[in-house]
Length: 491
Image 1 (cartoon, helix red, strand yellow):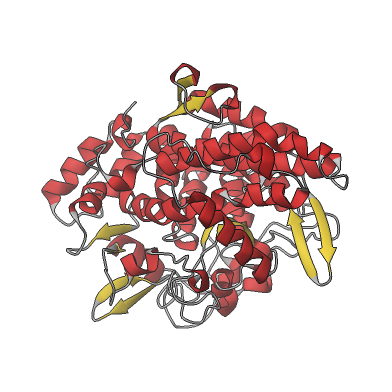
Image 2: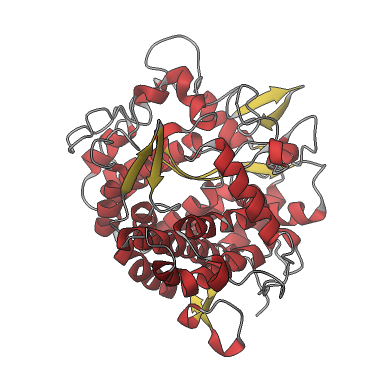
């Protein structure tokens, strides 16, 4: 990551650039803005163009993470939540719900398209720019745009695709593409930039000039969504490999073992692939801490189900029950008998109050996606090793200690007489719910697995979080129809 001063400057410029954005579905940028054709005069300015869309995501990602966990079996609303959040929790969607507005994600797409339209011109303006530099910049922009499209497709079931990479809304240039149809397009857009793994070191600062969404991980996740498990495993494994001498990057090792697991959210280090940054010091505060805080808004809380999952885990040794390194007082806490999401309020962090960043991709996430793909592609033994004590037989994987191994939990085993693929997949999905609790991943996981195992997989798990039997039955019946999984949007 770049040094703090440079990052603050970048963020200040980005916020100024996007402060005039409205909530219109397709919002053209203000007419008095600086045209990218004039703004992109150097490599530094092109790099800034890659960072600037993160300012848009600062506005939308907290509410997206919050909403996705309410949709799943991870959290549920409290009496403090307004009707809009209550409706999301109850899977009652409407186009006038401000938390379901896709405009910010489309603003990311329009912004990256506009930069892509002009970025080639820096070759004629900055003599120090190389072909590799330009390839990395374009890959950054296309990676961010592809992630935005992929996210829209999963949440809304279809996307309004801007043909010819248009930098603004034009009715004759928009086609509506289904979730299934958009995925091949995104993969084909990303593949030319697969080799953008370049490092440079200035002083003691390591710059990772890789895609913000990390191309290989994104391609792998798209293939997993397509149920192409062989390709998914191939690209997810590539995402974990690291670069050159930096082979410890993105491995699940002892670096964050046991009590150090919490440091993933305090410092990130080499396990975090991509984040949406926030900073209290420049008035870029993450509101999700307010929404979860017991002494703040307290709009939602962990479900009884996920609390029971944490508390039922068994350590390798020791008499203390539960997942002590990820569970109570880490991912969640108990205040006056109320359960509270704690992951965004870790007081020891160095990001200051309301400054917790949102992680888009991190090593354990990719390892568990890889385990899921391996299990479905005929490598269930490798999948179980990744889950338990770590698979070490791949080149440069010797440091891997496994998702459960590094938090000192007993290995999962497959009982005799059961289908091993289904059993291991259940283990993997439960582990993702613990490792990635309250990070907005669970709803996507439930949808992905339900598409291959039947809608009841998702419907049963979400319905189980409701105490009222009648309400649970209504929710279950609604979610048995896949069309009811997606947010509406007005065309």
